[in-house]
Length: 545
Image (tube, rainbow, N blue to C red; front, side):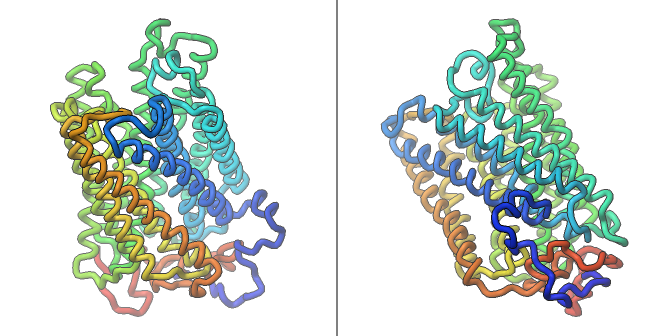
């Protein structure tokens, strides 16, 4: 806790939630906390759109025959689901919401380095989203979220240009956010806040920002070239015009595999904070966990071609990328083992954030282990383009990342809003989400191994039982998502008023009132202690690692 401030001594000061000037004050705000809330509202909106498309997909797959929607409509549904969920929910939500809200407070700053650039980032994100809404309203797109060429450049007449331009514009939002985070972490840390006194949350978000800056321009250029080829018929990717479709695959996956870690690294940072808080111990092997975030960011740029093992790359390239794909699991495994060691002999309390964090560890580990099968050349040939891929991806991204988002939302909700939520409903929602997710996606490992291809409108009748299980699980999963939305909104008015430190944990964000003041700190804090130093709370608990 900060040694130089007594934040509750000046009650007349306003918090960031005061709406003194109405909607205009929010739309023109430079407060990083308000911008985080704007991102939260918009990403949840896009999540609901992507979730609706997913529900229609699962309803279609209840029966082997394609009898709910037409085949071309089904293609548009899974394309919209993937584009919205990946580019407008999973990639932005954790960095833009938790990063914007918490990074300045955690390092003792009053705001991010470039507040106006921060607001511009949100407007770029919304502008990109409007392009996607236009695409959906006026007919959709049917290329899948991967925009596979030459399909996307020549053979389809749907709104590829609008979809690509929306992602192109939103990509600038990611780049600007990454630049803002890097400069903020480098330049605005409080006195005494050295690199190895930073919370592990900051290390994860710093690594994420580096990926944003280095990888996002590649996907932007790739999608811009698709637009150029469709408009001018310049042969870049289409072989009929002298282009190379494999070039697009290399460019797309050079971004998209690091993007997987853009989605998961922030979740790892959240889980580190939650595991420490509810085990009452310093994270075991702090330095190893910190550098593992950097290691994941570095390795993520050298594994993209494991998406291309069946596309004709050389055997030597395939062997190298197979090895690198297995090595990238090492820093992830370090985190999982160190989280487990942190809980060992800890004073564990199973509050809602902890239950979601434990769900993250289980689901992410399952996703990581099944990824080893896909990095193995022989197995990959059999499993590629089957529902095994769908299950693996969702265990990492949806089961893992969404569980981490829910853990972070429940952990910092009192800090963000000044209100507590009903703990019993929170625990129930965590259990429902974990059960519903496994019921939805575990059968897809089996049906994929048995040979059911993904993205197919109809399928052989012998796969129906497993698809019915998946659709039933999706219904349970939907309840697990809707329940928190209901009680968190309810808590804004009826929830118990939260103290500045409701979980009784160390950290600068817990040393100020809830919700925070507009300027975060009355005085700049001075940090003269290690991260996760529970001895400062006077509890006499063990400090591990």
